[in-house]
Length: 278
Image 1 (cartoon, helix red, strand yellow):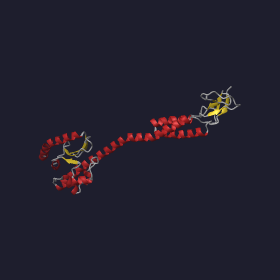
Image 2 (tube, rainbow, N blue to C red):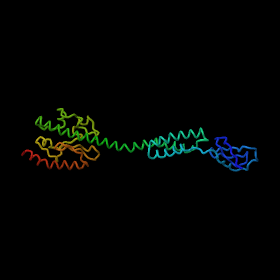
Image 3 (cartoon, helix red, strand yellow):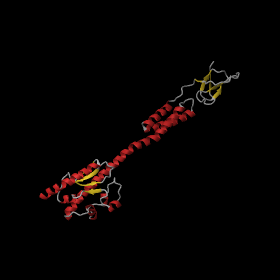
């Protein structure tokens, strides 16, 4: 006849039909306990049988929730990983302190592990995903600065030409010397050049198309003619180009810029001739 008794190790109520005085194994803590009652003859050598659990249902909802939140948080949602980690810790403490009321110790530990992995891994994954986007945004902002630099150069050249009625041989350096522009305006943020670089070579980042300063002085404002452009500062993706009508545009790919410059040099004599006739 089956007999109910408490496990001397974990305290849970278990049941076994093994004769009193014989050892059985607790189905929860795996401890070997002796069935209470009068002593019985020793059992034959062999494996110790497991007892059955007949106590009140053990609550494992929190441990299960910890495991589910930990798995989902590890794979998709970072906040759920934190929830799984916290629930797993609480469920494990309850299972250890009140083994008769709370179970799911293994699920709680799994929830702690998966939640902890999610807390560590998910931020790294988010950083890996966002970094390229942030780098792209920084590059786009640098392109805007380059375009603004070129438009500023075009305006400053027109101001100098109108004020001094002359076209200097070294236009960029003259604009810096006369205070029309600052040396920083000659630096493309994507080029990696420093102030010392442009002070040594004002054309380190931007190139003035030969003859276009004279064309501006003659009143040429053809929007198809390139006045200046930046060197290959964007890894071949393209280049900002300043046109004779004052607007700047990012042209891609960079090989297209060379075609525009060549086209400008072909159109320039005709544009100068029309400007002189007007």
